[in-house]
Length: 141
Image 1: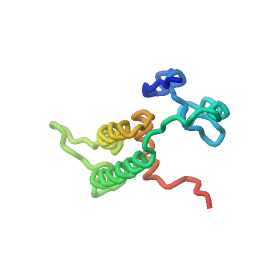
Image 2 (image 1 turned 90 degrees about the vertical axis):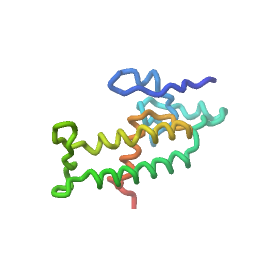
Image 3 (image 1 turned 30 degrees about the vertical axis):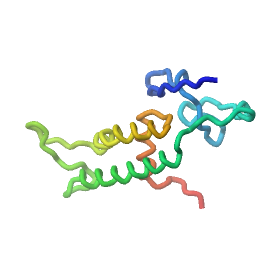
Image 4 (image 1 turned 60 degrees about the horizontal axis):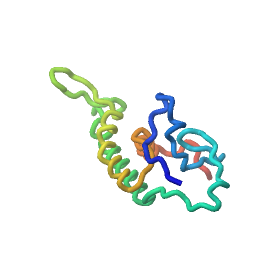
């Protein structure tokens, strides 16, 4: 059984279900990316799909999140850390959002992740990096 290795497109394009590989189920056996139910019994007699170097991918998420945390600190306005600092770009004073800087940081690390076998898209890669920085909202005790 050949697998479609095309990356998924954005949900806004309306064709995520057509392109999603449906590899990772949530606690209800639904795909974490598109929500489609995954029949796990179909995998009982088949080898598990190759998810790539999971340890390497997790390490890269950690490394990228640490770089992003530094970028956010360096980009914070010294007078009001909740805002990005003012920069002169061309002839204008602007604030480059942290998200803009994250996007710039994600490009090379996303290519590294793909080389390690990461199956997700660029948007999801950024979410994973941001989630790594954020404490869990509902920690289990």
